Amino acid sequence: MKIGFFDSGIGGLSVLKEALTILPNENYIYFGDTDNAPYGTKSKEEVKELTFKAVEFLVKHHIKALVIACNTATSAAVRSLREVYDFPIIGMEPAIKPAVEKNNNEGKRVLTLATPLTLKEEKFQSLVSRFDTKHLVDMQPAPKLVEFAERFLFEGPEVENYIKEILPRNIDQYGTVVLGCTHFPLFRKVLTRVLPKNIDIIDGNRGTVNHLYEILKERNILNNSSEKGTVVYYQSGKQVTDPDLLNNYERIIYQDTV
Image (cartoon, rainbow, N blue to C red):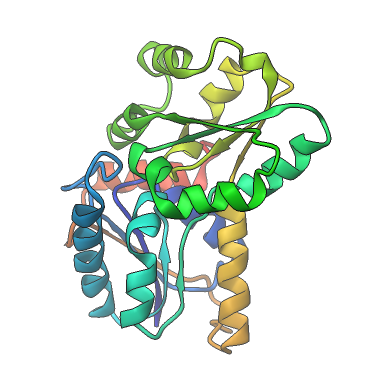
C-alpha cells in the first residue's frame, strides 16, 4: 500500500523530499491540485471541499496513511478528515514552537511567512497563543510565492524583488523566519541571499515526516522491503507523464533546490 501526499500544487514536494530521505522504501502517491491552486486565497469552505475530493481520489488508490502536505489544507480540513477516515492523517504545523523557544533567550522576534488563509485560521492562531507568551511572532502573508512556485520560478529578479517588498523594513529585529507554507522552502536559496546572515530559516517539513515515521512504526505498517520505493504523481486526478514536468518534479525532490 502507498502513502498519500496531498498539496494544493507542487509545494508538498518539499515534504515528499524529506520522506524519501527518511522513508526511502515506502511507495508514494502524490496529488497536487494544480488546477485549483492557489488555496491560500480561497475561503475555508472551498479549501475543505477541494481537500476532501482529493483525499477521496487517493483513498481509491489504497493508501495506508496520508500526509496533508499543505498548511492551508491542514488548517481548513484535517480535523474533519480524521472524523471520516481511520488511517493515519498527518498534517502540517508551522515551526512556531522551536522558533519561539530559540528567540525567547536571544531577545529577537519571529517572522512567519504563510498564505493569508493559514494566518487567519483558528489552528494557526491557537498555535501562536500556546507558545508565543512573550508576543514575539509577527505574520506576513506571501501569496505570490505560491504563484511563482507553480510556475517553477524559484529565483530571479521578479522573485527577489517581491520578497524584498514584503519583508519588514526593520528585518534586523528578527532571529528566525518560519516558512509556514510548503511552497516556501522552494525559495530557500533566494531567502538566504536576501535575509541577513544571522537569521535562521526554518520549516516544519522534517518534523512532519518524523511524525509520519513514528506513527507508521507504532501501527506496525512500515514497509520492510529492502527495495527502494516508487513515486507516482498526479495533477488534479490526472497522472503526470509529461517528461518535462516529471523532470521539474524530480529536480525539486532529488537536487539541492530545497
